[in-house]
Length: 138
Image 1 (cartoon, one colour):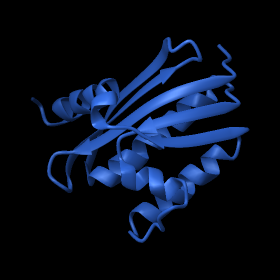
Image 2 (spheres, helix red, strand yellow):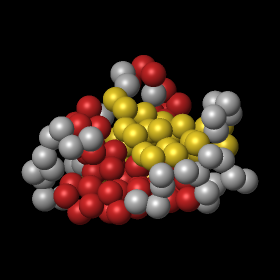
Image 3 (cartoon, one colour):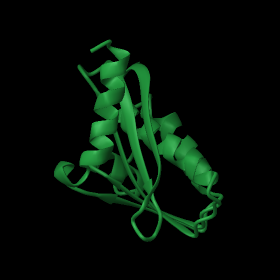
Image 4 (cartoon, one colour):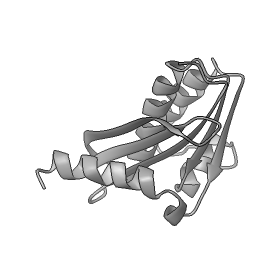
């Protein structure tokens, strides 16, 4: 299925920092209908690394839909400000993930990143927590 524009909510989290981590992604078409979801345990990592890994997974999935434009919503203000070039990426573990995301987005006509409050990101948060539960055997 092809979609010109995708609206994507992502979340990554870790229990402990670092600790067992998971990612959650909800991909919607322009009519806000869910077209794909990702809930994946990613092992031990930090919250910020999990946020970046959720974005990477979402971008890879978005390529399956031949989208031209992606609008991202996530509740990590740090990651949004880094991706929008408002903050420098000083953390050595985040820098390669930042570069991977930058390179992965080059195939799209337009990609935007928006910060939203956690309560507006409930579905992606739920998927990330389910992944952490699976990974830790809860």
